[in-house]
Image (cartoon, rainbow, N blue to C red; front, side, top):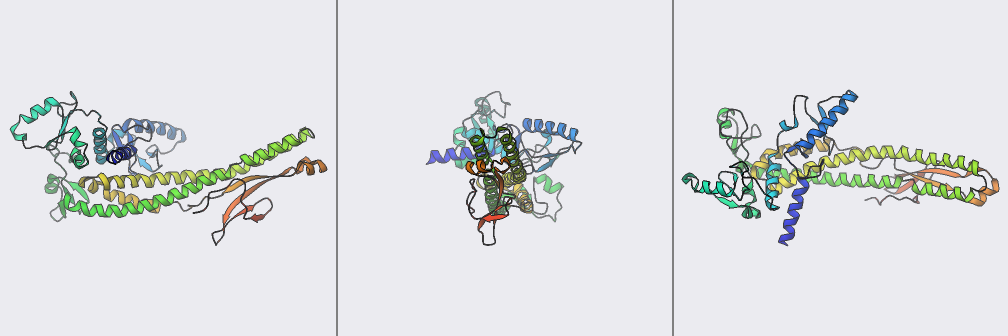
Length: 413
């Protein structure tokens, strides 16, 4: 059981730590506002291509779509992907995954001259053998806790592998840890920020005091996102079923079979009419496919957007430290509110039309010798009445039936 749980944890981490562009584990990740992360190199190449396309179309060159969910983000011409903020939680999860998978970590004291063998919790550094010896010889560091990489793989020690977020404001020496949360500004702060930047009237507390309250609120947001994810995935499944229902293969086969049966009787006229019928099938398919394809793409993007926030919320709840929760919970909540407002109005497949061919018997055709009366291409549209019952409309004859066409949609939930 323990081995299975460990494998599952690693797989879950790999899912959230995989770049959707190159499909490899993230390298120097940058996270967009929709919580999708990409390698800095992959995102740079993606934006270069997008900028070339926008120049050709004379569109705005500073707005780009997320490669996963199509949410727009801004990057001006004078800005680079490297300048986008790194996600503290994602970077910590990458380090933990490397430890779990027994990958080599560079020593952070000698800048990678030797592989790390342990981590000093007090110094927040991975150390190689030589640097560990030097560390242990310093009297002022003797009280620091040092854990081997093997010890860090244990669940109870994983939080110790995470570096604390540091203040990045200019003028603060040695980048002090962000240990205080200002409720007024809704942001993490270091002691210098509290003294120098925040007025005395602001309400600020140690992060451990505020984190649990924010975690409870984040769980509520998670439940909302989970519900929205289930709804949107169910809607996407129905649209995908509708795409399959729309397929014209059966109708085309029926037309071609009928063509073979009567080909020897009237080849030229039959060929003309057959091509015309095939054209009608393709036209009917294209008309329905365009709307469904557009709706499918919108719903796919919306599912990815919901899941982007959902996965982050779940992992922060399960694996995030107090700092993680406080630094990201409010943003996830705001994203969830945006997601609620942006929910597509049409959650059911639109223009769900099945192309069906209604062939006449060979005997009746031979009796009249009329190639213009081979059959009809029927556009069977699926609808639901006020009682929730499914029925089909034949737009050629204007009739309705509860009998399903040959290509069937999945049962309504």
